Length: 86
Image (cartoon, rainbow, N blue to C red):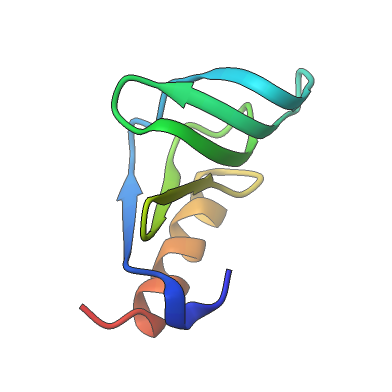
């Protein structure tokens, strides 16, 4: 995702729920197309053992991602927040 097209970036300590409708799932990773009541369809690239995540919004597209651990998820958020104007 290009920085210029990101509308917002949000850190969620409690994570985001959803059901995979296409993609890859393992005890370690959850990747692909997901669906929930809040976003409808969204894309997810997350480690399953890390709860905090970053939610990027670009138009009607939602991307949820995190890192290998809680600290990595927060670092992703902080770095993106520096580049995305409010």
